[in-house]
Length: 163
Image 1 (cartoon, one colour):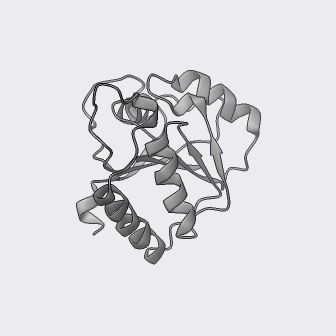
Image 2 (cartoon, helix red, strand yellow):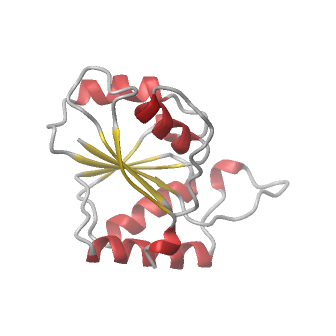
C-alpha cells in the first residue's frame, strides 16, 4: 500500500477571534495547491481515496486534489486532525481491509504528518522531517499487521520541486 502524506496549502494566519478549525486556504494557498495538483496529475499520480483532516484548510486542499481528478472520493478522518494518533489511525486502517495495491492520500497538518512518517519509517518520532505546506511524503507500507518502523520512504518533496 502506498500512502501520500500531504500537508494542507497556505492558510490564513492564526488570529484572535478565528478558531483554528475554520482557518481557510488563502488565495495564494489555493493557487499553489492547484499547481501541485496539476503537476501530480501530469506525473500520473492517482489516489483511490483522499482522507482529510476535518479542519477547513485540509478539506479545501483535499477538494482541490479531487477537482484535479486525482481521487475518486474524499473521506474525513478525525485521526488526521492536529494531535491525531497514528496508532488509532493504523487500527482504523487495518479494519478497512484495503487491498495492498491501494493508494491513499492523507491530507493533514505539521508536525503530525512528519511525525507519522518518522514513526512508520524509523519506529519513532525523531522530529526531523518537516513537511512544507502543500508538500508530500510518499511511503510504501508493508503487508503486515504493524507497519511501524517498516515503511519505505519513496518521496519527500516540498512544493517548489513540483512547480
